[in-house]
Amino acid sequence: MSAYDDLMAFQRETEALGQVAGRLGWDQETVMPRGAAPQRAEEMAALTGVIHNRRTDPRIGTWLETAEASDEVEAAQLREIRRGFERTSRVPAELAAEIAKVTSTAQGIWAEARAADDFGAFSPTLDRVLELRREEAAALADGGDLYDALLEDYEPGTSATEIEALFNALRPRLVDLRARVLASGTQVEKLTGDFPEDGQLKISEQLARAFGYDMSCGRIDRAVHPFSSGSGLDVRITTRTSLGDPFNCFYSTIHEVGHAAYEQGISTDFLLTPLGRGVSMGVHESQSRIYENQLGRGRAFTGYLFGRMKDVFGDFGVADEDAFYQVVNRVAPGMIRTEADEIHYNLHVMLRFDLERALISGDLLVKDLPGAWNDRFEADFGVKVDKMSDGCLQDVHWSVGLFGYFPTYTLGNVYAGCLNQALRAAVPDLDAHLARGDTAPATGWLRENLQQYGGTYLPSDIIERASGRALSVEPLLTYLEAKFAEIYSL
Ligand code: ZN
Image 1 (cartoon, protein in one colour):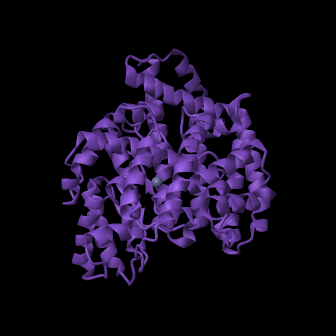
Image 2 (cartoon, rainbow, N blue to C red):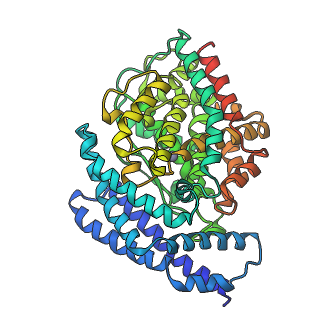
Image 3 (cartoon, helix red, strand yellow):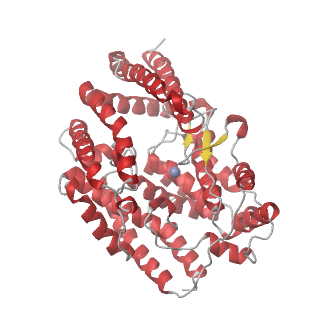
């Protein structure tokens, strides 16, 4: 056995244990009995310890010194293993343990503070989480930028400066488009009435299948906050239902199917290896967003969805496909990111990106966060934040230390814009297929040009390869401006 083979055999077991840990997490959010929580915490801690020991095993360093790659794929495997090993080796074990301990209780404290609309109840915890993550970032950055060091976990190969440049190009035109839509005088109706939940779940499964989700290697369950989980041959998704808001269920399902299809689309040659999962959060989000928005909220596919809803719910008060397309794409300035339309969503993300960079750099103190949030929100959205749970307490991310994660949501949208442009050029009659609920030409193109490669290429490289152009916000902006100019008669 060569050093490369030894290393890969060792890594494969670590990857398998990582999948088991992920499945325990899935179980906890879906079907685990509530009374099992204390035991589960101990089970998870034990497994996490085993995995951590394997990831920092000194033999990895020795193997990496002598392992040689014989082709591009093996080189990429070594690149990913080296990146992970160097990262875990740089962070002192005590610090890693303290971060795990503090963030495991911080989420509960955040949830209680949010329910009570009480920032003061969360602020000392956030202070501590921030302090630990800054310490970790300093260990990782080795004198470089702290925020970039954290970003590397979610979007390798990019920097805050690059993201800032993209966002600076995006923000003025989004703010302008938002203002023109709201001033247009066009009233788009909202869906009203009740939609029985068994009917929602039936359509949800049809949608998952329509978007190519392989149910023989997956399953759909319900969760409070929808997510997808797993890689390779076991990729599961969750959705949720809300009696008066079936779109929440349908578009959560399509979004999670986008994530799951990426994992299911990766070449099985990479099963249980570092290349056998999505390369970054941003690329992952590009898949969920293009399925959800450019495909799922497009005129052609909403025509198909309108028919399915009429089959299941009868006449639900929307006259025809054109009116339905408007209802699906209604623009409304809300305070909650996860409920935002395609225009407002990115403004939510940019607000968080700027504030968390300032928190990490030390320019913004935790005690000043609510004021900074509220001022920025009013400037971008034209509305005053009414309460903390609609403001800086709404997202779970910072409580669990996920600084550097937020920008990947908008990067995903920017990537999706580039991919959509290339997809439409490659498949000119795509809409004729989508109108019949046939997404195969789109999902096939994405699998062929992006998904199959898993972690082989760095995020910006795979997006540029697949879309055949340099990364740019232009395709996303052109798409949004054309779509909403038509809906709102701008
Ligand atoms: Zn997502």
